[in-house]
Length: 282
Image 1 (cartoon, rainbow, N blue to C red):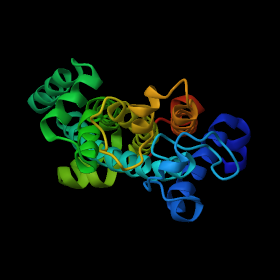
Image 2: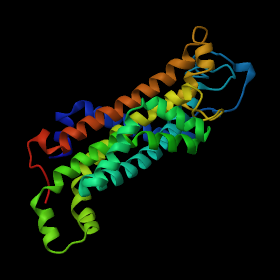
Image 3: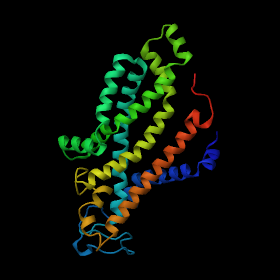
């Protein structure tokens, strides 16, 4: 299936991909694209409405909103990629061990997952952040741990389906060790669901980080963060200077929309049951 055909059949997925490409480009080129220093305070320019000198206006410290939104893309991508890397690694280890070995290992691991999923996700994140404290690394770690449970369930289901295939039995019969079977046969065949998990997880991580920052547990100031821009002064000056909250909110919405649409499209394309193909790859 060619990429052009995929784009035609999944226009929202293609739109999501374009939004993600724009987000990545903005994050990488932030020093070039930002017209002003995102953390420099200018008292004389505080609470200015959008104009030619400040296209998205300024905040209560006179900082350029456009520059802070652009640099906020870098923070969001860094947090999203770091959190998804941690959650995907942990979920893959748990899901593969649980699905491949089964038995007591599966029971113990799944009961741990059930315990973690019994609490609302935001409560889990707030508890972890309360223990770790503020900081970029701590936010990444908290989001990574918080996103492990659901992803582990998805990967476990994929492993259970693949474990029953004949080529797994053939590999065992020929004397392959468990680690060889996992590396050569299990992991390559669950690459598609892992890719979908990663794509959808990025949008969830960005939204979760925004929620944490909004509640005051995210990246500490003056680091530009979309969620932090919404909270604090963004709420205080909502009536007087609505652009302080509107534009970061639009950035969050576009990023989450892009990842969700791209993830849905990849799921439809890569899932054999949805595209009518074979249910595995030997």
